Length: 404
Image (tube, rainbow, N blue to C red; front, side):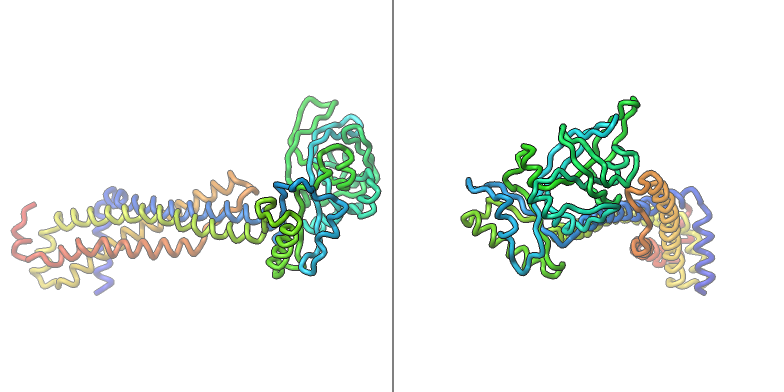
């Protein structure tokens, strides 16, 4: 019985292919919008979250906005943050300088810090060593550079022991960071032998004391980083830093700000969830519009097939069988549109993935696909009930008299 009803519903759907396709179009657009938009949102959020996680999630960023005419100096910095919840702390100051080696020169970002910074940021070396406390104490002219910087200035990555001129001062390269250990700041480098320019990442790290001596306004510490023993003790470390800073700056909470990397990760997850719900809601509206289209065309179909309904009832067809047939037709149109929408979204995501390249990973979420299928099925049933019910309760005599 069900098989015969399904066959009759399928034949009725195929009887007018163009009308069926136009009816399906609302469902196709709704499903494609749901899958594509949610997938792109997930991919974009995942890309941002990966970049944040690569920076680490077990450290605090502290910025001093008002030093109360009692600036924080390097001499007291290490002693100030001696707390069991704090693993290590490192000051940070940045400036732009002109680097030169041989015939190559370019603008690069120079960071003044201590050896603890590399530990906090979980940086890795390609060759050489990190900055040491002795470098800070002796105001040494040493520098740790990124791999890109080494290749651009010296033509090779293993640049340990090379000399690099920064604003006329000669620094010795003591270490080269791995490719992933970079602040990712793009600057343009110029080669005097070439007219072309290209954007690369040029940056280096020197002792904080040396940076202060270069006259880069780094004498007073305005920003620094603090790491905890592990991610579980981040709250204790944050509380300890806040207490130390309050004591240091006369209990003025506005004199400084503390940014927790783990909180940024949590915020990103909340944003992702909210964005997915919002986009899903917009796409759901498209599906509802498609459902209204199904109801409309099914009502037209019931009117056109009034005599058919009358004949079937006259030869003994039950109300349930007629209702089931029209309900099945609505469900077939809805699910067929859903399938077409899934195929279209797969093609669209393939194109988007090709355009985005390595910057963003886009893939079809199986959970979203199943939600689309279930939602489309519900729409087919809900918006097909009224037309099916109207067809089932037509009186045979009135139906046979109908001339159209």
